[in-house]
Length: 279
Image 1: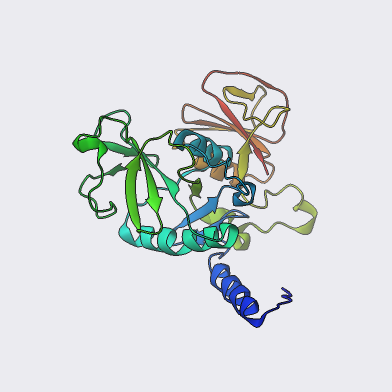
Image 2: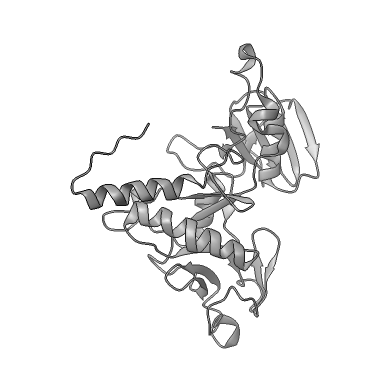
């Protein structure tokens, strides 16, 4: 139960409307702590760490790392409906609640490799004629000199704009993961009480970190896996495979191979390998 002690009455009304408005985004189909909007699951970086000087607003590359550390990718809009529902509604409300106003956030597409070809993190391409662009954009591919290689979404204008990937204090990280596989929804996977301590409660994992809290890239667990799955599309799908196994506690992801483990342990240097542990 939520108790709100309010003075004056207008503040109480605002708080009630905000709680009512935000609560509709969680439907249980997403990992714990993620919000379900349309067909995806979304989560901002910790916006409470931004105030008071906004020094923690990330660059595009830093935003990608924030999402990767959560086993996710930067948000990518595949339709105007998704842009409207996630950007115009959900994101603006979440930022408004945390920051007092909506602000720009990064979108996971860039033409840094081929000027004018915006490759997105979900494997799609963003057309230069897409209706997701603001009027007059993109500018990078029409004489921008290759500087405006990354994208952000502008809530106050409801569209995409290309910008410098390293522009300071430009945008936040809004991350996206797929909904939980059907087999890992609570209705399908509720174990007997005596087994509940083994079951992954959320199907969600984070990259292993060193003693200073930094992600341990190119390090993986060297042990006999409980199961190896080849041809896995990405880390998110590997996490889904781990979530299907009752005793899976961690996994290695390397070159589309997914190694599942029923334990954690010491990591060794393995080029191109990533290790994720259950949250």
